[in-house]
Length: 153
Length: 67
Image (cartoon, rainbow over all chains, first blue to last red; front, side, top):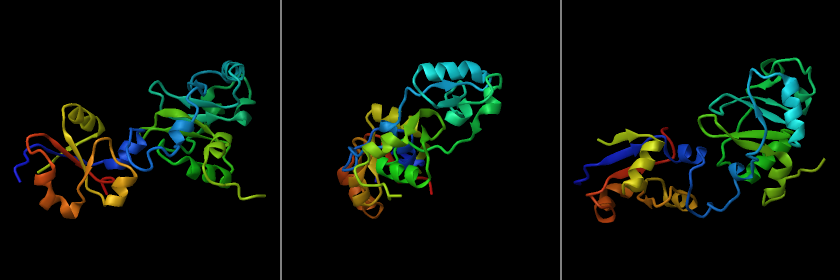
């Protein structure tokens, strides 16, 4: 057909959405996990001591902290329960390793359903290569979801 | 034979004026597509590419994923 410069974006739309790339279309304005997640969540590294992190997290008004490496790839999570541990322990030992992460393009209504159904207080939102976008709080997901999602009980 | 590119390659080519073509069905395209993309579902690609696209500019095609 005479086209000489043809490229195939093999990873496709899923990869684009998962990386939080801009989109157009009828669902473009729909709230998604990446927009509602809090990007100001405190972070810490594996080599820090829990005591140092506890103070920083509380001073910032949080009860959760995401453990990341230098590239902001998520390695673990410190929830309120883990933050109450021995201040002398290393983060690597205190954290909850390998938490379930979700991609920024997931509609917030779907996240709200999932977090309520699985009793998740929060969920790290990451790009497809694992970098932290923010921490999605269940209360924020529920508040921003356009449909009812509380199944009662 | 199309050359495979990644996300950064897409951004670079689009900045240089490449045309984006989503080959998924129309309803999927209408719901969400990359900025500026046109929709040429796979079954119409052969017959409509020449009339819709500029053959002098690069063309980037994509679908949902690599599966």
